[in-house]
Image (tube, rainbow, N blue to C red; front, side, top):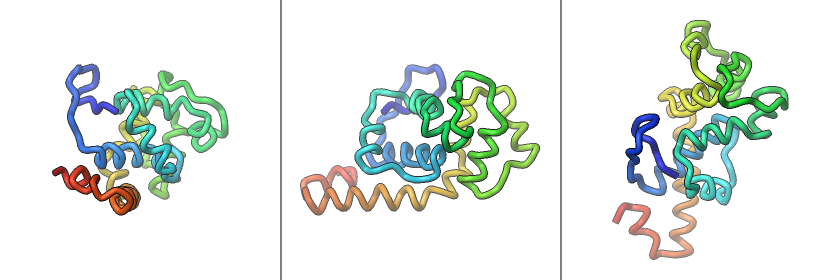
Length: 156
């Protein structure tokens, strides 16, 4: 996966695999209300998609529609749906957005709104510990099976 520094830019960042998996795990958790399997997570993280392309693919999925729109598929390029935003807030943060917060999504597409929500500091604060523990536990499990991976985990 490639992380766009600026939307539309050709600049990408070189980031550690653990960071990418945590980033993708947080988007998955925000989209569907649960973490993916490790196989799904690593598959998504190793894709050739940018972070925004991944967010668009998630919004286009039946699983996202089932969780956030009563099963009706969502056009990622359509104007942001208040129903979808309400559902994202409710299942990720446990409350509906305020009117002012909801208004902040005006002018965005469904994909842009999801990306903004899933990568927000608020969602990171709410889901970060769980996501990071999941990713770290899986890397530790891999390291116990293959000790040669330990330098990769620790950036060595």
